Length: 181
Image (cartoon, rainbow, N blue to C red):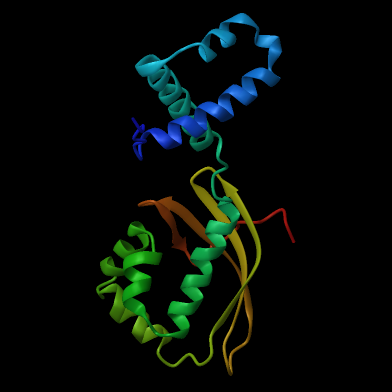
């Protein structure tokens, strides 16, 4: 009679072979691990399954988090692109912090209208990130902004980690300095 191999059992068998190879190489751990090799049937599947879950869990936990500087830079790049495309809705909904949007609304204009009024005439705007410092859920970025027919300016932008991503809290942060030039 021919054995039928299930699709579920094949990965566990491969994992078992890998673990056995590792166990043989780790003779320091001695007899307790040698007993794992003698397991058969359901007990073997359960033990190997638990080991697989532990390994996957360790990989997930030990995986490095995305570089916060890079995430801040991505937000500023998306802001530069949305400004260039005159996509004020994206800026207000996805890139500005809730507090900044509320301050604009408190001045008497919806965020999108205020941005359109202030930025509509700007031609070929560019934003260059010169330096970033992240401290917990706050970040400062030194940026150089230029546009056709305008004098370039270097400013400090404050960002906050809000709603699962970095958001711009202030476009000019008076008195703020960055250690990086």
